[in-house]
Image (cartoon, rainbow, N blue to C red; front, side, top):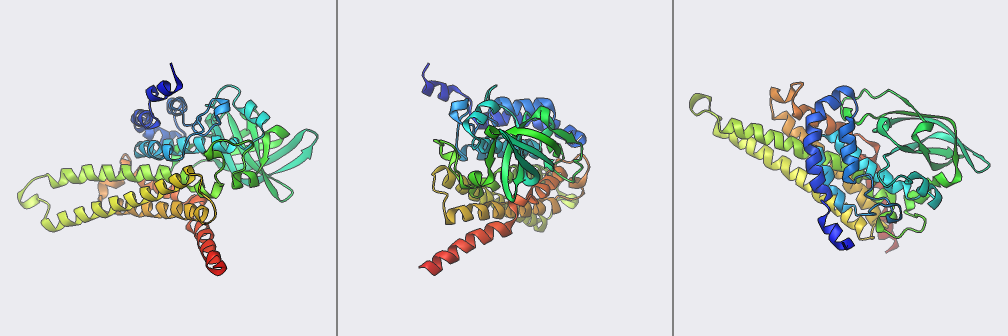
Length: 381
C-alpha cells in the first residue's frame, strides 16, 4: 500500500476528535470533581495522534500544520474544555521538544511519537552547569495533565538566560495543588525538581524556540517564531467551549420559544432579544475563529515574520476577548437554569474565563509587539 493511500484511509484528526468528544463529555463532571482527566480520555487523545501532531517525521510524527489543529481542538472543547486544553498543549509541547538536540529527541521519542509531554514554561528554576549536562532545581506550578505525563519540558535560568530541559517522569515530583475556579479537569498541579541531572542532549535555549531555529528543521512548523503561534494553543480550547455554550443556549432557547401559546407564551419583544443575543454571540465566535484560522494559515505558509508575528499574538488575544464576551452574553441571558451545579453552561462559562486569563492570551504584550512594529515601519518609511 502506498503512503498516499494510507494517508487517504487514515481517519482525520477531526473525525477522531468527534469520537473522543462524546467520551469526554460523559467524563466532564467526573473530571471536574477529580480535578484531572480520566485515563481513558487521556489515552484516547494520545491514540488519536494529538501528541504526535508536530513531532518530526524522523521520530514517527507528522510534522503537520497549525491549521489542521483548529477544528479538532475546537470539537473537543465543545464537550470538555479541559480535554481540548490537554490535546492542544500536548501537541504544542511536541513541537517545542523538536528544538532539542537530535540525540535528546531520539531519547524522548524512543518508544514512539505519542509520548505525553507536559510543559513548565516560566523560568522558575535554576540550572548549574556540570560535566556533560546540568543540575536543575525548581518548583513550577500549573503544569497541565502532569499526573499522566511521560516527560516534562521545564524552563530554568542559566545565569540570566532561560533554557529548556527535558526530564523523564521518574525524575520529578508532583504536588497536588490544583484547586481552581475553571478548567478543573486539566490537573494543572505543581512539578518539583531537586538537583536533577539533565544531559546536554536534553537542553536547548528558550531563544532558539522563540526564534523558530530548530536543529536541521525541515518542516515549516519547526521554523515558526514562538510568539506568532503561542496563543493558538490556549485560544483554541476557548473557541470550542464558546461554541459548546452557544449550542447549549440555542437548544434551551429553541425549546422555550416553541413552548406554550397564550398567557405563558414568550412575547414578541422577548423573542427579538433572544434572537439578537444569539446572532451577536455567534458572530463574535465566528469572528474569533476567523482570526485564529488566519494565525494558523500565516504560520503554515512560513510567512510569520516581522509584523505578522505581532499580529498573530494580537489576534489570539483579541479572539480570546471575543470568545469571553460571547460566552458572557449567553450565560447572562440563560437564566437561573444556567447556574445549576450540574449545568454544562456554568462549567463552560467558568472554563472560558479561566482559559482567557492565561498569560499567553493577555492583550497588552501582543498589542505592543504589533503596534510597535507598525510604528517602526512608519518611521522607517
